[in-house]
Image 1: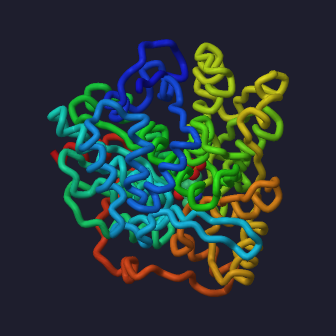
Image 2: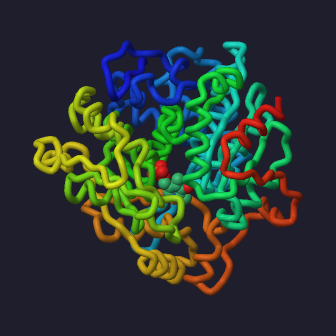
Length: 471
Ligand SMILES: *Cc1c(COP(=O)(O)O)cnc(C)c1O
């Protein structure tokens, strides 16, 4: 399997090359040259694999279809270590449960940091050191986080040979639980930098350092951000796992709480592979850039002033970094058109309009996307409703999904992807239910552990100095 860029016909590249690369040299994102296909026979076999050998074995099956330059026995070890049941709160890794109204939840947040990002990061945490060792290289991961990505990356990469992590977060702006999760990690190769500024400042610093070619080369700066292809590939697996547990062969719909379009892009890929998915229901919060596109055909990027701080903060985005991948497929993989739409950094309020195109008109039929938005009041009402009906507490992001799914479900069963555990967003749970969410025992007392974090000004030289100091 080889990989192509969404923006040019540059020669395709093998998996192991694009694993450690971020963007393609032309600024595009990587996608497989073509999507591998599964038929009913394969799905029947995978049903037994999941039942008899577990999630890691299914992950091996799915990932093997995308990776042909790692020997099979090595890849089996990689997937087995990534999805080792003891790292997850439930040995099924991604169990499903049914609410009393018939809707399903696929539980993606049983990993070390209690958010679905662990599903992908755990695989990166094995693939990166493997590939680095093969090449005799090391890497310095530099990232910016507003909450979930940072702790997920740190839990996955701690103690991995050849990998150092520098994670920027906006000082004092993450939830107390998220801060405790990250800052309690005690590992010299994991460095938390609390930046005096907001999340956008953190991202700008990462961009500035990456633009410094000499520094970047000297310290082998890399990233694990949501455009990394291997993250999407890892996420494809749970669409199969959830479908296998809910369906006996017929189509199901998935509802996905969305921000950067990473999670639902994996659903799109699973559907293109032939998994019987009816609708891909995209849920946004008040920041409805993506909902607006699927409703109108107009993609209008927002500026940070127009990006609201909501009670489902991990979906507060103004520009969806993975969206270009879907547009590439929507436009029949026409890299020239994609380049025209995306190549000039879209300014705030920059937009493109596909509303008059035959591709947009055929979208729902061909690709299955429908979309809805949720508000703070909707979110609180759903948390209460599910709690009263089923005694189960959903987190605010999952509540957005449940709300939107309720409005847009068709005839097929709907699986809502649960993207975080409520303990991460206790304040909103208390507002909805008047009581604290359950806290899994593994997180007991993390707020009391010593904190490993250095506060720095929003200045690239301070970041450079921290990286230099670590050698
Ligand atoms: C990251 C995140 C999302 C959004 O996922 P995308 O892949 O960016 O669309 C939703 N919910 C939670 C809890 C998250 O951490």
